[in-house]
Length: 428
Image (cartoon, rainbow, N blue to C red):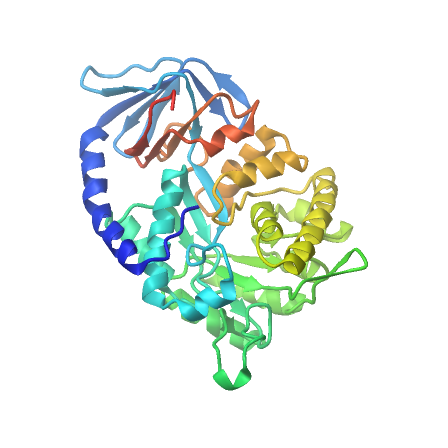
């Protein structure tokens, strides 16, 4: 994902977004639109429809098939030798972070600057084919993600449909606290403190008031590999997490947790969270509960790969060992039959390729991304499939992603809610 570090450049690009979006929408979006392509993937069944047409009325899909009936006034867009898919879903993104030292950027960059960068990251993700995302915490930027989500919804800027958590929640001295800075400087935590049930409930209520869609909690950390085994202390008990899940449920929403391993992952599963993110180590008991309760793991391989290849030599060695361990554990998770969702963590579609590399089939990855992703974001029946009544969130990729998942890294066409945001020639 492109990230911009010049504030003046950011401001100039943001100024262009409004006019670009309007022009694009006026040029290609109409009351009735037919999208025509060589192929379409039915993600639920894995069946290929060839040739393929989709009739769109306003922001919704009306008909899907090899040929669709439509009135003469419908605009027909023939994309040629491409494959149509539902819009991609990122179930774990941090729009307010960019690759590099996360702890330093949250200190050195102001919240207004980080908000501009988040707007540009949202734009980049949409143009890469991600039409819906779950933002898993602003890392110290409070409820600024609410402003980005609302600006997208109002058409002021372009970006995916967003579910946002506001600031994540953490304990004093926990995973996202400023533990390595000079205490005399009183560097703020990248998350909201909550040390017991009462504080958890208060934090959830405050974030809900500020516009959060769901709750993000850090359950484990810091992470260390010792003698080939992951050590990751838990932060909340199962009873504390259950109280958070109950409060979120009262507000009509869910809890997603950062949980690298045991026993924190087990406590999260026992509490009935919506997802266990990163999930590098899961016990048999945890996986059994996840399968029974349909709690997906969100592996986020791409961010582990990034840190294994960037930084100081000692850091890369440590991250490489963690990535290798994660890959071995992932095979056990696949064999156990637990559900998955896909969280590229802002690295865009590289995650799809890594999930296949480490053991999933291309179809299973697409189903995890689109079907489980739609459910995790609370938009099941609205996104994730190309079906009548669903939002017209559609992407086109070269080749056949069921044969080569890397096709999703080269999105040529993006439509969100019936409006075309990107269109490139199929031979590009």
